[in-house]
Length: 429
Image (cartoon, rainbow, N blue to C red; front, side, top):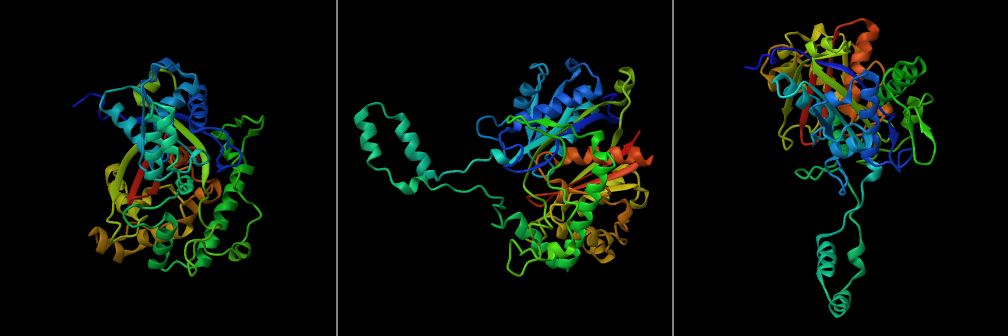
């Protein structure tokens, strides 16, 4: 066993960009540029010599075809030493949290001392795909040498080859979109449309209040865009929303469904990063950490039998046990808001003794959710959800709120495509 294995991994500092609705403010910024901003800012805020960084892990769900190792491309954009090794990971919506888990594991095992973890998503950069037939046609054309061969090949061209396949977010196994799965989950747990709309409004108002009192200024960095503008605030937070306004919106995924554009997280561009190291190394360098990672747990469910987004409820007991605590010890709970219906359904599962007995084989419910400690600064519905970056946002948001409240323990819960769930317990220092 490495002598470092039992030592805590701490989060020294970090930063995220504002989150912007896709194809708006960050439309002309590739994921590498957004990632470069937060890597550079994380180092600047920490006051660390960048030459001390051993590795970078970055998450992304939809990497660009021209540079799929986004971690490496973001490093180049950041201006940090190009000698830092970089790895890109994908655990869908939990990708940045998985990046943090990977760096933490390398630190605990003694492979590295210091690492940066984070993630980015640029929905604006996703391009339409073409059919296999079209791909074959143009590849064959590119291999031909003589003008005669090329002209002969072009004579076989059909306009239908140019029909694009629009990018989508569907589960290959079920054929359902994330929204359809979320809608079915809300039905299963009997979550009403009114409950979902009220939750979404409350989240918007909490996010707006957090911005107004300066909470997000602790870790959100302004971004200069190629068109000369500076984006310094999340663009989708709406202070003027109401249950009455949301009630007028039509369901998106099913005619009789309950998920609308108002109670779901928007497609978003953005990035976030955190600096991780051994606690003793932070002391040696004179750095004051924000907090430590207490435990990490993951779960996967059979999506043919279980709701796609229920995974975190299975991971929570594992994370609490590994951390040596109970639900009642938590001071803050941060849950990713893919959809209001998914959040409320997960809360029902957490609080249900019957669900715990049937699904987890335990006699008591996971716990009782205290909404005064739950997503207190708003969540993904108002802030946005750049898939690969949300985990970094949640780590920073949780630790800064614990610091502000002078409290100790926070739980971060992230549902992800493929029936995956990831839960992290962090503690303030």
